[in-house]
Length: 380
Ligand SMILES: Cc1ncc(COP(=O)(O)O)c(C=O)c1O
Image 1 (cartoon, protein in one colour):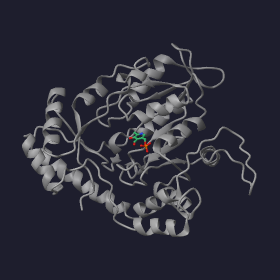
Image 2 (cartoon, rainbow, N blue to C red; image 1 turned 90 degrees about the vertical axis):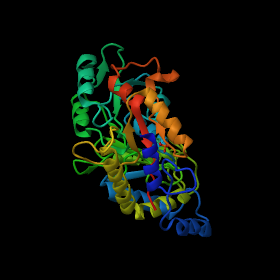
Image 3 (tube, rainbow, N blue to C red; image 1 turned 90 degrees about the horizontal axis):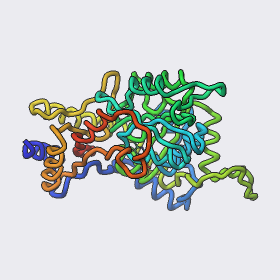
């Protein structure tokens, strides 16, 4: 069977070279805009492309405001600061995620609490979140939710749209509203994914996107904070641009800000990438459909978009029988020049998050043992 899978992947991505997992593609005006940055000398934090890229993302996602930043990780960090996560607080997230989600919580000196994912979306399970809050959460007189066991404030919840497949975000936000917990939506992988017709990242108080090199829209490195709240967007811009008060020559900074700006040169690439994004999305969805048809004739499940979702299929994925078969397939496919990879090691298995409170992690563990990502680049 492994041989047939490898042959099929090679037929999708014919090349003499190894087949990458997700290669960046530059199909439009990237070079032109980069040359423009160099010709005008606007390669750094001044220039037209940053606000243009923010406008593109705002219009595309339907978010009222978008603030470009240097990475998805810095976007998460600032989004948590904006929701006023403070040292000693707790933030609920999922155990199956890229480490940046948990690290951003740690940057705020807060503690992640891991609630299991569900099989259908691979993201935070709203039913388990509800159970967790019913058993552990208590609303106090300050109007905030506290963890009965640890006494800490549950200051935010960060669901993540795993591999681009939307979580049941409407239910998660509804539960969090009941407990007065702000939601930061980690949509780093999910630009272009819709849930009930609405863009991933636009359901929570704040959403974040990543434009890392392996994402369907890349700026080399970059991220975006999206929100419908004008005040949050203004604060995001301020904090990510060193909290400098506007003045033609004085340097007055009124907060401990960050240099999390996206350079114009990166935004230029993002503008060009957005011009081609509709075609990119269609191409990725067509590839996913071809995988779906191929795996239908095998015993290996291919992960398809959950109910009510239209996914960007960022990284295609299959489910192998067990961890042993996962290891065998990874070794075999990689030996044949196909870049496959397992899903992330669960956060509570990493040394820095081993001590964190968790619900039972049956589904996350089940996925960690079996899920393998297979090549997902745009086919040209
Ligand atoms: C779920 C998730 N969150 C956050 C990030 C961080 O984004 P960046 O690499 O742009 O810092 C990524 C990945 O790149 C991610 O996959």
